Amino acid sequence: MKLDRSAQPTPYEAQQSFGTYLKDAIQEVNDVQVKSDVMTKRLIMGEDVDLHNVMITAQKATIALNATMEIRNKVVEAYQEIIRMPV
Image 1 (cartoon, helix red, strand yellow):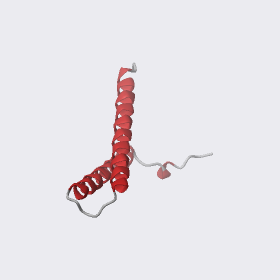
Image 2 (cartoon, rainbow, N blue to C red):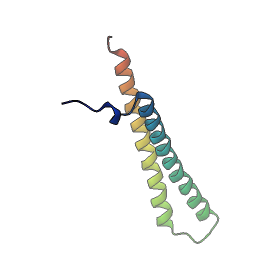
Image 3 (tube, rainbow, N blue to C red):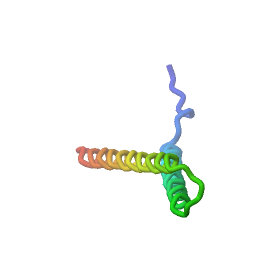
């Protein structure tokens, strides 16, 4: 059985795809953080926002940031393991 190599992305295409995915994921985390900041500012200014919505938005932002940091730590750890491998 012959493998169709044309279906597999080139290393460059895979790198670009991963880079785009990573950029989009970080942008989503940033958007959640910005939304949390806006909700908090609205609450401080006395605008009509529910406290529980502000707290939920802040918690979502915290969870998103913590998850991002854990993923970053795992990626760095994996990179360090690869670097230590003998060639």
